[in-house]
Image (cartoon, rainbow, N blue to C red; front, top):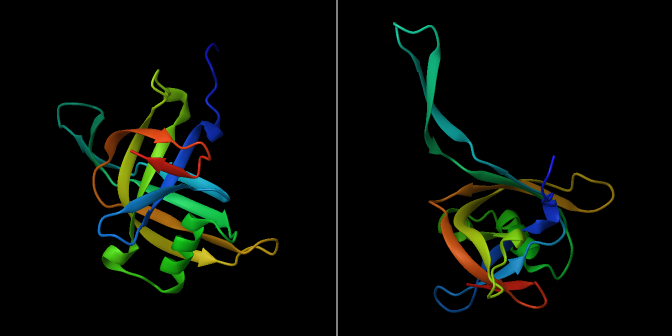
Length: 162
């Protein structure tokens, strides 16, 4: 096989935390996560026509979700925000966050990267399931279409700006 292997670390996720001002969001790199796994959850329309011996399938939609798990660290803003949503049992718009997935293999001549941005509902599942570290897990479920964006990552790689 020829080509360059894309490492898991070449795909970064940045979690949007609402700021003090109306509509302000700061994006922080999602560090300390042991799982960030994307499922497309394709919706299918399958049928078999009477004059054919096989079924046909079409994709009619998607319901993307991202499963997450992390070891809890202090001073990690995305983790603290997810813990607040979990502990305070926030619902509705209070539990919606934007995530930007950045492809580090797509750097252009201006130092910008291609990325996908989407709003997600934060769906907590469990906490404390490890004896080594305090852990949290759950999923992010899509709240609308993704948007293609071009991003610049700051030097410290903790924040991102569009």
